[in-house]
Image (cartoon, rainbow, N blue to C red; front, side):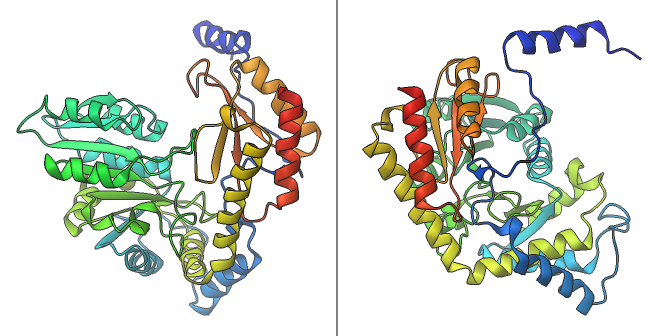
Length: 378
């Protein structure tokens, strides 16, 4: 059966704009594109320990068998959530199947009809989708602009206001001034919600995330941690009060109406968190590589191209889908897996090369890829 004509036309527009998405093939290029910041996805130790944990505890089961509220709440969930809550110095933790599920579930369930959501204009698509499903009114504020945020707050006196941001933004790699943001939310008794997808495994002595590293975590209403980046596996967790957890269990539809994660998936999450407790070398090496990357781009005269970032995400703005795709392909032809981020994923004119730095990248690889970028651009 053919695709409806209106859908065919939408695909044609993408093709004409040079923005049609396609699934990439697996490659053996030098990794500057994945979110596997400290190499946990390829950790043989985590793989073997997860398997042994299941065998030793006689958990021989391939699937959860149902939603967590029916038959899928196997014993590993409680063990993992207790460990994660303690790791993050949180009262409780509730595991979701993915970061997307966590954000959609949280924002569609928590803010109510007479509430207001104020979110950073560069918030992730999963946050925006959750907000769209909410009955609350929502307004975006200029990126990391707290004067603009305060202007909006003042429009809604005597209202429950949820303020939403990310500790590291996925496309720019930058961070808000979290101390200032926390003070602002406390001044007006707002509820601050932060997505820490790209800080787990990156910031903090044990990779615990940016808010905890800054000792601000106990002043935040909810933290959302995603496991598919620095933790190298799958799933996510919402950290907060016991009442918040109870409410999400009762009203978050992406939690209620889906089959739970398999015991193997939850065991991998648990073992990866246990590895974070002792994995100092990879986290330190990642930080050294981030510093080295910033030093090299400055030395090569590339600094004006890049969004200012001290995170593992470094974005070079190269306007135009065709232009940025061409340079990405040139880098890939030289053996470096660097991806082009196209509009409409980012605004038109803000197309970019997105470099993801890892603990396993060498200084030679960083120097080479930035040297090639200079040659191809200039």
